[in-house]
Amino acid sequence: MKLPTNGLSKDEVVARMEAHRRTDADWRGGKTFSLIYNAGADVTEVLDEAARMFLHTNALSFSAFPSLRRFEAEILAISADLFGAPDAAGSLTSGGTESICMAVKTARDLARAERPSVTRPQMIVPATIHPAFHKAAHYFDVQAVVVPVGPDFRVPPEAVRAALTDDTVMIVGSAPCFPFGVIDPIPELAAIAAERGILMHVDACVGGYFLPFLERLGEAVPPWDFRVPGVTSISADVHKYGFASKGASVVLYRSRELRRKQFFAYVDWPGGLYASPAMAGSRGGAPIAGAWAVLNFLGERGFVELARRTMATTRRILDGVRAIPGLSVMGAPSMSIFAFTSQTLDIYGIGELLEGGGWRIDRQQLPPSLHLMVSPAHEAVAGKFLEDLAAAARSVEGRPPANEGMAAMYGMLATLPDRSAVSRVVLDFLDSFDRI
Ligand SMILES: Cc1ncc(COP(=O)(O)O)c(C=O)c1O
Image (cartoon, rainbow, N blue to C red; front, side, top):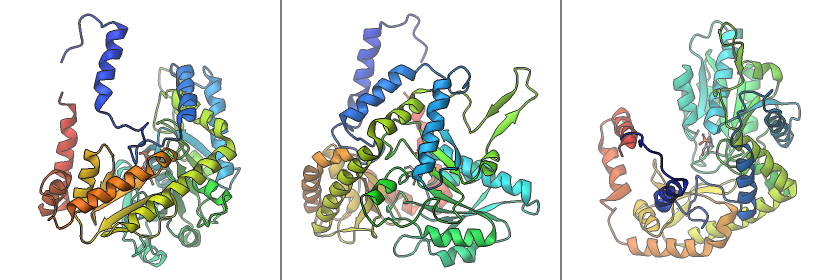
């Protein structure tokens, strides 16, 4: 494909974009159960306005855009306060993956500086940890030591203790994990880390801007934040339950000294002195302004109210799922994310029928399950979702597992000899995305 010789008119460009997005997920209608965290039209309008005002700015230079410096500093200070350590120091990043990569790099660089005997640093992660930790391990040459989770889908602290070696530099837990929405036993894990003098990272990418408000509602929230002794860093995404648009996450460290290990500077470049806190160089200002705008627009009361509505909707959906013969919820979810499975029904077949009805719902594996992440906007569609789910469950009754679509793909992958063969299929799929 070549760049068009003559540019199109603005109307034509817009018309084509409209046409291309016609088949995109209907997130405004509450049909997506992950990817977009929809807090309603008023929040969306605030985000639109922030994007309009700050789209053409660059946070690479805070001297050129002091507004962005201010927004970033305030987002970090608010987050540090919410997570129980007002003096914590952090960075704003493009998303959970970048925050996690930075926490892993920081652990590696601290070990390089203080523990020269460690040549290949290791971090201990639960099997349910987000793959961003494996990506970070791959990028930064840290070994991820995976510990299986227990029947409650939480990592057993004693298994973590047993996995410690002289090369362990960090223990990681989730608050909560993506697949099952349960919070790992953070106080026990942090105590092990403190005892060994190593770091403890809590991945609160999904829970960071939800759990504090659940706690204010008087709900029982297991301890997970900086109030737990031994927790040294936290990742939390403003672009998830902070309801900001994509491109905003924070990584926070208990001390400024620890954060210094994250930074990068190069001072011998003819182009001038260069320093940046995290992975990116140039950074668009729109997500930063959006994150600041939504925190200030909602305020504590707004977030508490959204958490209340989201939990009420979650409980309604949980009850509805449990009432459908053959379906069961996995574990005891700590907030508004959960998975459900079936011993008797073709769960992927149910997922495909739901997708046929316009719902976007994640399939999980090991074991097969469907995954829901509830947003305030699901309040209006929970009843319809449960009706469609019950109908889908009824229509797969007595049917053998589907032999087409996702079930077939997972079935085919299960027959491959090893995980690297599965990985090749997935990478080939990724390779195909640039075909027009
Ligand atoms: C628990 C957890 N950690 C990390 C991430 C990665 O976040 P991102 O997709 O913003 O990179 C996610 C994303 O869903 C998550 O649920």
